[in-house]
Each structure stands twice: as structure tokens, then as C-alpha cells.
Picture 1 (cartoon, rainbow, N blue to C red):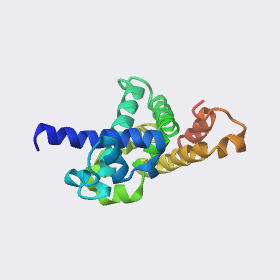
Picture 2: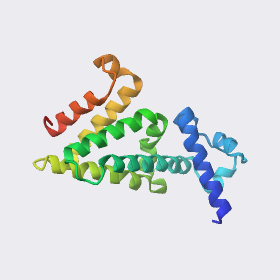
Picture 3: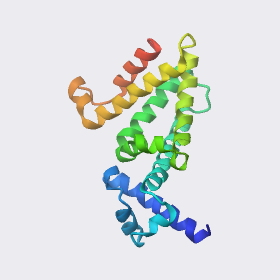
Picture 4: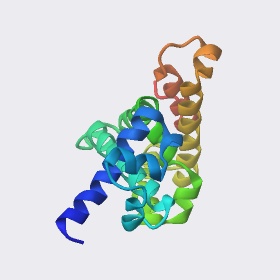
Length: 191
């Protein structure tokens, strides 16, 4: 692939990232991405033979951004594992709230299961970091299981917060107290 082809491929993904941010995952059609990129509606198929491949490339960008934010939030590793997990949880929830369309796209089961463009491999390092930190806080437990339960809890918080349900149920205007409670439930009281 020469530079102009690579440039158009990247442009299609860039347009998809912008579109999902502006209008949500449901707006990611091949025709709309092509229209916004200023190319024929068939052009995306040259670089992405299936719609899933284009969606996976867009979702990869989301995982890369989330990984960058997570790395920045956990810093150089000098904070305690519990502090790093708190920072990681906050970044995860902020990303879910601030980038709702991308978040929904990233966790579409059909994309992760399909293995297109190594999307699953892109998502696993963040979970691996979660497992490692949970193992340091809870050496007595199966860290993968506890991390899985914590991740499911965070995902639920993200979804319910995004729908406005948690705010109604708890009266909270910030998800941090809910995050702290979830961490306490899975890791023990952090006080």
C-alpha cells in the first residue's frame, strides 16, 4: 500500500472516529463514512472488505485512546495498587461518559469476537493491567475472576450513568462515590 492509499485508509478511520463522536455508533455506515471522506461509496471496501473490519479499525482507535489515558492516570507505578485501580476506574468511567459512542462500539461483542484487525488483542492489555493490580491488592483471591467482576461492575456503572439511571436512583451528581463503593465491594474497604 503506497502513501496515498495509506492516507485514504487512515482518513476513512479518522472520519469514522469523528462520526462516532458526533452521532454515535449507529451512524457508522459505509456510505456515510465515504460521503464525509469525499470518496465514492464503494471506496471503503478497497481498504476494508467488510463493514466489521472498518468498525474494528475505528474501535482500535478508541482502545488506543483509552490505553493512553489509563497509562497516564496510573503514572509511573509509584502509587499504591489501590490508588492505581481508583485512577484506572475513574478514567474508564470518564471515557465511557465522554466518548459514549466510541465506548459502545469498542465493546460490541461481534467486533471483539470476530478478531478483525486484532481488536481483541488490542483490548486485552488493559484487562491484564486490571488483573495485575487486583492481584496486588487481593493476593488471596483469583485475580482474573475479581478483575472480571470489577470490570463488569464498572461497565454497568458506565451504562447506567450514561442512561441517567444511577443519578436518579442514588441522587448522585458524580460517579466517584459509586466507583469507590464498587472498589470497596471487590477489593475490601479502602479506608
